[in-house]
Figure 1 (cartoon, rainbow, N blue to C red):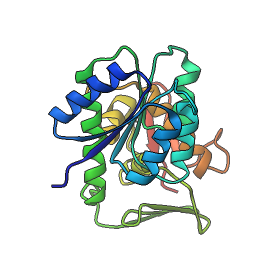
Figure 2: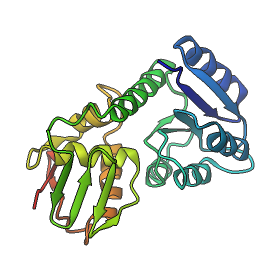
Figure 3: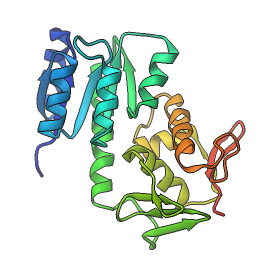
Figure 4: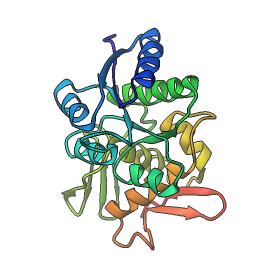
Length: 234
């Protein structure tokens, strides 16, 4: 198996060194960048398997770096932030980050999240996580192509991230079955006891904005109040 590469973009050298030491110990190759512009260049030219991205960066902040990366790639992004404000966490997810962690964080927890994201990516590339025989699910004006990782709405391709596709796929292959947020974190994100359920809510909201005619009155991804979410196969 090829060595997986993690790009760390953070302007605090001690943090970068700690992350590099622990990730290298786990068998990953590590790329380093200490400002947003340099990090974006490495993300585009080196094509890493995962990115750890700080929010507060010189030259270009992490939100802008995330937005620009998402224009070109669906690489998993975990944002690192010293901020506690809810709006900052949600903004990162809205821009396409897969998850976030607030500093100071446990290196053990961070390593677990890196492993989980890379494990999910490996499974998806091998197409081994689809538990039904059909490679295409058609529901109303929505067509989900499992093999091509493609979603079409009224024959137009929907611009969707890998994580959004994973969530939609997981729900769609088990229509009408209600999943709690914790269950979705475990099955889609690969987190057993790590992770914040708000990550699921933001991803659902972002996905609804792309596939629903009226995100406020969804047709496909339905909320079961007090429980979780399910896919309504029209």
